[in-house]
Amino acid sequence: MTLRRVAVLGSTGSIGTQSLDVISRHRDEYEVVALAARNNGALLDMQAKEFGVSADRAVLAPTDRQLAELARLDDVDVAINAVVGFAGLPVTISALEAGKRLGLANKESLIAAGPVVAKARAAGGGEIIPIDSEHSGLYQCLRSGGTSEVRRLILTASGGPFRGRSAESLAGVTVADALNHPTWNMGAKITIDSSTLMNKGLEVIEAHELFGIGYDDIDVVVHPQSVIHAMVEFTDGATIAQLSMPDMRLPIGLALGAPSRLNEAFGTIDWTSLSQLTFEPPDTGAFRCLGLAYAAGRAGGAVPATLSGANEIAVEAFLAGALRWNEIAEVVEEVMQHDVGPADDLEDILAADRIARERAKKVLDKRLADRRTQ
Ligand code: MG
Image 1: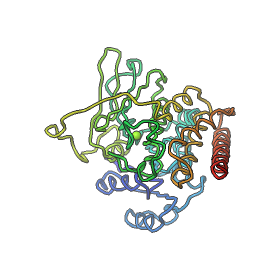
Image 2: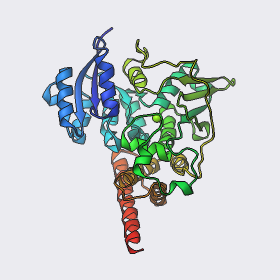
Image 3: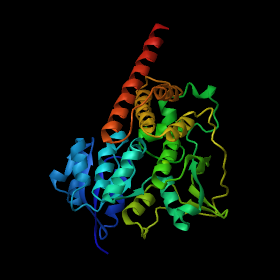
Image 4: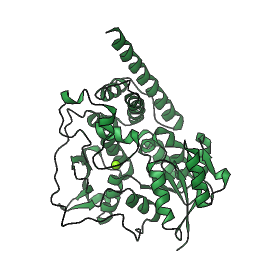
């Protein structure tokens, strides 16, 4: 097999380091040719040394332009977009326009810029292999039938650390409580999003954009064991589920090697100890972000960008101790009530994101001011 050359953008974060771990175990198949990281220069230097990446291709605190350039380098076969948040957008657009394979862990870029990403994918002929456990699961299940045979997609949600809690009891939760995810060990932003179910809502939009299935045909079911990652129900009533241990190196391996699977398993299911798989509907009253995301997805255009941008600001404020957990949904909802502009090109998306963040900050400032005068 020929060596696949990989750019790992966002290399010092959770997905970035796990991607390099997979590559380090399969050096006869993959070679790292570019790295970028927003912070942790010491780790980036170590990574560059370990994988033999030249200094000009291991970029600390890259600009949008540098990220885009690294993603479309001539000798890159696979660009792993492990950048956190909306900042990952240049990688997604650039890799797809250049006809690369995009291993997409950065869901925000696809969610915020859906119409623009679709154009870039069509124009450049690039392909997206999702690095998100649910979407990798869907990708695998969808091998069982054609798109016209799909009745619905089912995303599972662990429910996060606050599953089963009432809306009232959630008002006083702390940052530490919210960061304490029961099954997955991830970055702070996505862990907070998991606690609010915004992550699942964003994943619904992500599934719609990736697989072209309508919102009425995408469902969410809470499955605390996180063993089933996704299911696809087909027109004949057959449901195909994807089960595996919760380890992101499986989706990463598939993004690197698809259509081939890695010849190494990062944990397998022990059927003698796995005694039950349980399911329950999500509590959309206590976890309002899920419904907000469905609404944004259905509205389309720049509304998902607005949702995602406002959410990033709200989550930052929560992590900084400036906002209560239950206010994250309130801030997002308030920002979504404003009119948004078109979503025809990248400039539109950047504007929608910027405006959403400004509006979110205004909402935050007002809340903080109100709190001080109380
Ligand atoms: Mg996920």
